[in-house]
Length: 403
Image (spheres, rainbow, N blue to C red):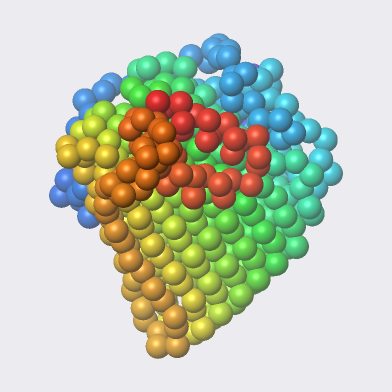
């Protein structure tokens, strides 16, 4: 009996079943997005809709040695199901990690609280099988590593993660998506007063895979959230970040990188809501596109009425490596208050020929010089990954891929 079956077996645990049924009813009332759908116009979903997906193999035990990160507390999900054999949960008095939060009857108070009317989010709620339930009360000793592995090329899984930080707590969360099939993921995060979370999302699935992911983050008074989101794999990927600063003094920093080649499609969407006074947000996003690939970045910062003293800065810098590649960058500001300081901007360019000439004049051949410049451009984002072994592995992976 897996975690879901155990949860559904008890009378007090009837809420997941009702939650699923409500989500499925909602999904049936919503249309799948297409080129005429607001927010999806620049993303070609034809390759995804041409597939027919089935549930993953419950008995699969993939090799994960390449994805292990030293000195982290690791919880592994294979095709959406918790794998006790592959997990390595450290004894950390400040952190509680469990599949589906079986020991806590209050999970339903947080589950799905921040979702919007999105068909993929509803499908995740209707079809998820296990959920990484992370609670932090204090200073976490180890980063939490949530590893999602897909094993079947034609399979679909629906990863779920719920994270709650108590007031004055601190933690680092790494979410990593690897393997095959369709991954339709949802993460919900609530950060208590004066608490802080560093969040790293690494999407490096197989080049034949599909990834549709989203995160909902709610900050309270004086809390902080720093995220690094890396979209490095998949045939088609889309990641949505929605962050709400609900109390004064909160701060948000978002770093993002999309790397595409061949016929890959990568779509990054962010929305930061300044709902309270004296909050700050900083966002830096980069796209690197080669081959006949396409990358999209849409960042929306909304300063609501009453959010006086807001300080927001947003930029999108992008690098085209091929005449057939395409990058669409759309930083946006919506300001409903006068007492604010807000800036945004976007650039799309190619490798600087003068920089290339300089490196070649120092003895590098052109491919090595190009690779060095591209890696340096990407490293400005990757270097914000605070977990050193992961940061080094990502930089090595980028260099190897560009080779």
